[in-house]
Amino acid sequence: MDSVDKRVHAKVLMVGPDLSLHGGIVSVVQGYLDGGLPRACDAFEYLGTGVGSSKFGKVFSFARALVGYARAMPSYDIIHLHISARGSYKRKSIMARMAHKAGKKVILHDHDGEFKKAFEESGYVYRSDVRKTFDIADRVVVLSEEWRDFFAENVCDPEKIHVVHNGVKVPNQPCSPCSHQDVLFLGRLDARKSPDVLLRASREVLKRFPETKVVFGGDGEVEKNERLAEELGIDDRCEFCGWVTGDEREALFEHAAVYCLPSKNEGMPMSVLEAMARGIPTIATSVGGIPQVIRDGVNGYLMPVDDESKLSGLLCTLMGSEDLRLSIGRAGRSTISGRFNVKRNVDAIVQLYKELVD
Image 1 (cartoon, rainbow, N blue to C red):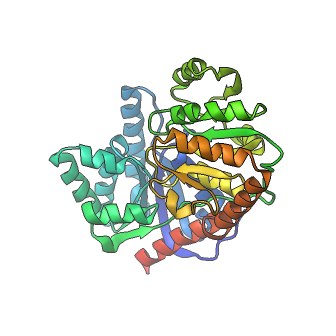
Image 2: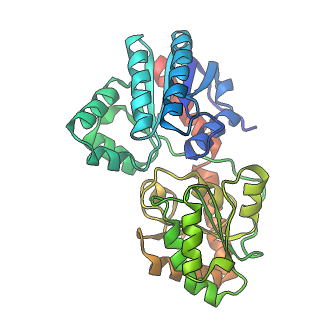
């Protein structure tokens, strides 16, 4: 396990999604737990807000989690709430107000690349409620400078906003992007992540590089994208693995020549950090916190949203040069090791706790 440089004399209750679920927030939280955050506090508890696929199931799970929260909350000094937009926001706003009323220090930690979209598309009542909730928070954590600017301009007092970049554990040894030919995508297959853009961009790539295949590790609209691959005539060169974790996920990284995430919006995607940490050259859209990580043409490549032609050209450039894949991959790994490692991430959170209780 990673060591933690800082300690804080505080009892912390952290609340977020159930750790059995999929997604970036779970990965971030697991990084905190594995990276030593509980050991840095006088007391630490993580409360998952339950699971449920149907609307009734989600309501029931949250009601049960709320009972546990009400019992646990009085014993803690700091309540650290991980949130995203819409339903997650509504649930965590209830918890934030309970904690504030009880005199606890409240941290709202936003992860959602769609928070801006949800805020701007909603009416006055929702936006007013968001502002009231964030107004009672003692600290607001966002994932990048771009998100700091949005919250400062639209949601809450800039003085309470802190940028804490996501961090990942950097493996001792990098992968070997020159030894393999796969183009890899990890994440939910939906409109926001834009797997269809990668599929369309891959047609020319697969013509030029007969050993290459495109691998998708994620749940969601799998059948829809399988049909699109068939329509494009590339289904025999595409592999849909479903959601992957653990050794299976590592195996996909090991066989990747390039990692690609053409999302329409993001917070700071863990999969991009994980791929770069493994020395895999990465292409991603210039959205959310991604430009804080990727310097275009230096340690990765940035592309405009929905630009299939640009993505196709970048993929062909990388697949056509082992030396370029190696140099970009090394630069990306160095970036993550220096600025986006989990130890630095945990230390930043501990420092935030110290500011609230000292």
